[in-house]
Length: 171
Image 1 (tube, rainbow, N blue to C red):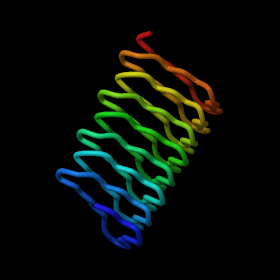
Image 2 (image 1 turned 120 degrees about the vertical axis):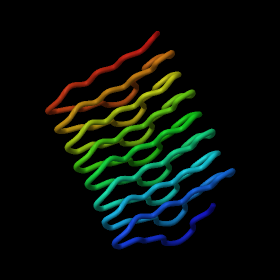
Image 3 (image 1 turned 120 degrees about the horizontal axis):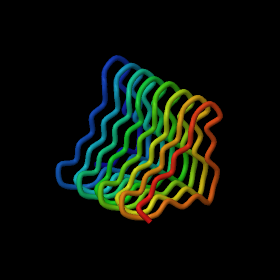
């Protein structure tokens, strides 16, 4: 599935599902009051905007990887990414009044952009390594970075002015 233009739901939600392939967003997916859900068996790439003003943004790759090269934003809810392989953030992931959760069930998580949970928590979890080479910010919440079988490497900045920062790794 390829979106190169605008998909907008003013009152409801947006659900994009590729049963056996990839999803690429080069346009805008925006739900004013509902949620944005993107699911694919293989890879998901966001190169533009996935946004929910009043709900959550949920992106799930059941067998592939997720790469964010644009903006993923949930103003009132949770921004949640789950991939079987790796999850990469190269630009902006933001939750204004909720939390940001990035998880790789078998691969790694790499942040080279900005992950911001303005009033909530930011959590990065991977079976393999977790690398932060960008910024992770939770001004009023906490930051949790967990590697179940690998390492946690911080090459960037982690800021939790009103909360805690917890790094956990097997190695």
